[in-house]
Image (cartoon, rainbow, N blue to C red):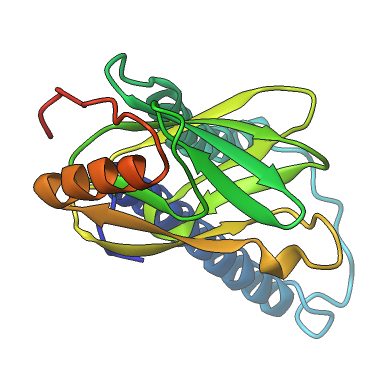
Amino acid sequence: MFTSSSNFSNAVDAAFLYTAALSAIVLIGIIAAMIYFVIKYSRAKNPVPKNIEGNTALEILWTAVPLVLFMSMFYFGWEGYREMRDIPKDAMVIKVTARMWQWSFEYPDGLQTDTLYVPVGRAIRGDLHSVDVSHAFYIPAFRVKKDVYSNKGNNIWFRSDKVGVYDIMCAEYCGLKHSYMYTKIYVMPRNEYDHWYADASRKAGKIAVRDTTDAK
């Protein structure tokens, strides 16, 4: 946590911390109230039970406060979901294929790799599909995860402004060798990426499709 490796990292971390802090405050409040009432209304202090009538204001309060807290958490989640679904029109499209037990990536010129290489600062759209069972494409450092189906297309997008090497894994149990579905994503400076792409395409007998979009 607390490492801004993609355009989603900070927002997801903030939503997580907000939810965790709110849950902790509510938990502490409930425990404190429980201890207070156990002591205040113990048998020793109240040997004769008394009937307590309903309190409309109190009932409205303990309904309204949890509702407001829940809706605030929903707002954070909804805003994050909207951003993750708003894929830039100029995003580089890479076809991501899942199979037991491997990932493969196909670039615009048809070049295929088992490791993902992307330029820094570039919006990347992954078109996800599976050739067998359901999987889940997950990059923990980027805070992105999407299910991958055999009978339904799905997509994911991200942008990393931080050069580095990050893990890619499958986040859905897909068979006995589920843990084998592990690879890397290399976020490279633009000139290094262009050199790698041209060289890899040439060796594979492909013609590299030049990306003219400037890194943002």
